[in-house]
Amino acid sequence: MNATFKRVLKNGAVRFGLIILSVLFFIALSAPILGTVDPAWLDAVNMNQKPMAQVDWTGPDNQTAPRTLIMGTDSFGRDIYSRVIYGARVSLTVGVTVAIVSLIIGTFFGLMAGYFRRVDAILMRVMDGMMAIPGILLAIALVAAWGARLSTVIIAIAVPEIPRVTRLVRSLVLSIREEPYIEAAVSIGTPTWKILLKHVLPNSIAPMIVQGTYVCASAILLEAILSFLGLGLPSEIPTWGNIMAEARVVFSSAPHNMWFPGVFLGLTVLAVNVLGDGLRDTLDPKFNKRGGAR
Image (tube, rainbow, N blue to C red; front, side, top):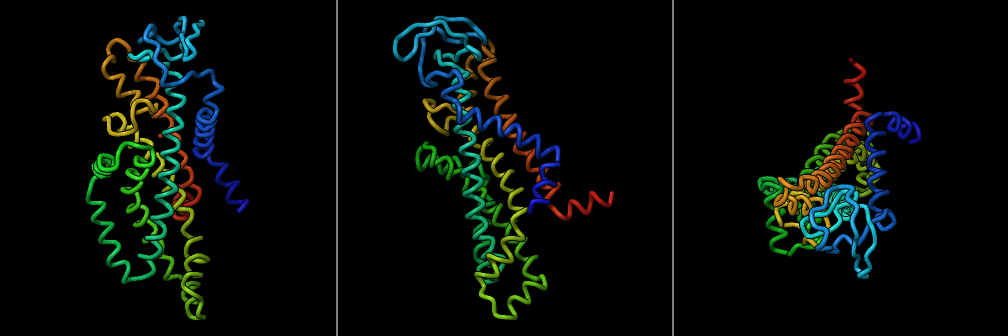
């Protein structure tokens, strides 16, 4: 385990992804102490201010004080810096939670489908039907039916990802179940649940971790798309998507309103994807063999 961990950390892509994501998580968790204000507070006097503008800012306590607007303000007079920082909380929460939920449920279904042939025949037809529906359309339908809440958005994004995880785990189980050690375990009467938990599942962990990073990146991007289309969380809750959606109206005169959340969104998705690529390079035995052959 230690040797594998050291090999993973030696990978440059893994280090890059972990550093960027660590900084983003620190920013999200430390939002209240990073010079932010209430992200929902409107100061009508200071609408569409430029980045680094020096203004007299009136806060929720009706006290006016000098303030440097690091990223300017939007068309409602809200501090973009505060909204972007607090928006990181929503995006990272959605990405991590969707990845965890999708992996747990998809792994369970994948184990059942890959090991039990009768279950496979029924379950995979259901998964094929779900995959036939574009993920964003399914997410839009679920949000429209259940309402725009954080829990609803997470479920709506996780549901389309479950079939993809299920198919991955199923393919791994179909390969692993033919290994001699599985046949030996079956021949000596080892309970099925023990075979799945102690032999099959541990040998599926590495590809699942890699898949989890891609699910996380996809979830962050899909949440931003839903919010940009006005189908995600309400504008009172800052997310990178709804910040950019509101910036469309004034893009020609205040393009910075869209640049800052767009940079944070792009950097986050890039870091997660690079981390996934690095993990694949170090944890996938087949990839290592191909790399060694070159």
